Amino acid sequence: MSIITNDEEGIKKAGKLLREGRLVAFPTETVYGLGANGLNEEAVKNIFITKGRPQDNPLILHIADKSWLTDIAEEIPEYVNELMDAFWPGPMSIILKAKTEIPRTTTAGLDTVAIRFPNHKIAQAIIAEAGVPIAAPSANLSGRPSPTNFRDCYNDLKDKDVYVFEGGETDIGIESTVILCTSYPPQILRPGKIDADAIKRVVGDVIVGAVDKTVVRSPGQKYGHYMAKKPTLLLDMKPEDADQLLEKIKPNAIFISAEENKYQAKENIVIGSYFDPDQAAKHYFKSLRDADMMDGDMIVIQGFSKEGIGEALFNRMKKSASGKVMEDKDEDWIC
Ligand code: TXA
Ligand code: MG
Image (cartoon, rainbow, N blue to C red; front, side, top):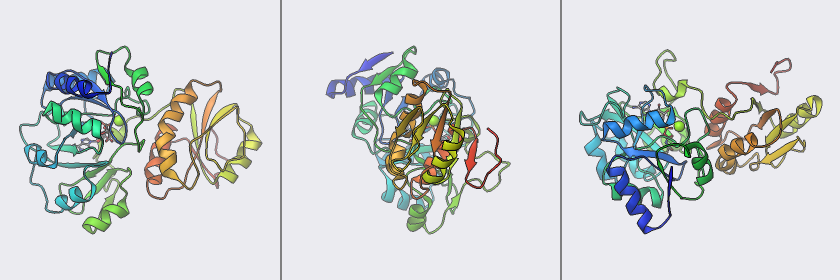
C-alpha cells in the first residue's frame, strides 16, 4: 500500500493512477471508497480480489457531474431528474438500466447499474481528474465495518497493492441510500441518510425494502456485513432498560453506548445521544474497530432512535450483530 498526500499534487496523482487501472481508496461524504476505473474490466476485477468480495455483488459507479449519467444509463424515468435535483451531489445511489458499454464485471452480471455523485470535494476532484466513472465499494475488506477515516482504511489495506488518499474523517459515517429507479414508485434497497419520507416528498411515493423476499434485489444485502471480530449483541431498547439489563447480567463487554446510558461496562465507547442518530451514525463504524482493539469478551451495542438516519443506523447495527438482537419485551432470549 502507498499513501497519497492530501494536496493538489495528490489529487492529480490519484486521478492518473485510477485512469491507468490502479486501485485508489479515497474519502466520500459517507465512507471511504476503494476506487477503480469502472470501464476497465481488469481494474474492476482487482477490486473484488483485493476486498475478498463475492463476485455477484455489484459496484456503484461514482461520477463527477450529473451530465455523466447519460453515458452510463438509459431508459431514465422522468422522476429521476427530480431525485437528482433534490439529492445530488449527495448520499444517494440510483439504479437504472445500464448501457451495453458498461462492463458486466462492474454490475456483477446484472443489466442494471448503480450510480452516485458524491458530495465531497476530494472525491469530486479525483473523479473529475480521472475523467472516467469510478467503481467504488466501501474500502473495507469484505465483511468488515466500512472505513470512515484514514486509519481504518490503512489497517484493512496495508498489505494490498493499492493507494490510499489521506483524506481525514468522513462526515455521514454510513453508506448511501440505494434506490432502484427502473420503474415507479422507486424502491429503497439499502437505507441511508436520505430516508423514505424525504424521497416521498420529492417523487410522491416509494417502496421500502424488498417486495418479494425470495428475490435478492441488492446482492450485497445477503452477505455478512459490518462485523467486528468480537461477538456482538444489539440491545433494541431505551438506554434505561439496557442499563437495567446489563446491571443484572454484568457482561465482560465493551459497551457502544449513548450519552444517556448509566451502566459502566469494562469499557464504554459513547457515540452520541440516543436522540441524535446522525451523531451516532458518524461514529458507529469506528467504534466497532476501536472495540476490537480493547480488552473484553464481547461487544454490546445500545440501539438509538430510529428517526431519520436512525433507521439506516439500526440496519447496520443489526447486521453487525448478525441478527443477535435483544428487544425489551424479549425476556427469555438466549445469547
Ligand atoms: O456510500 C456509499 O454508497 C459507498 C461510498 C464509497 O460511495 N459505497 C458503498 O458501496 O457502500 P458498496 O459496494 O459497499 O455497496 C453497494 C451496494 C451493495 O449492497 C450492492 O449490492 C448494491 O449497492 N448495488 C450496486 N449495484 C446494484 C444493482 N445494479 N442492483 C442492485 N443492487 C446494487
Ligand atoms: Mg460495503
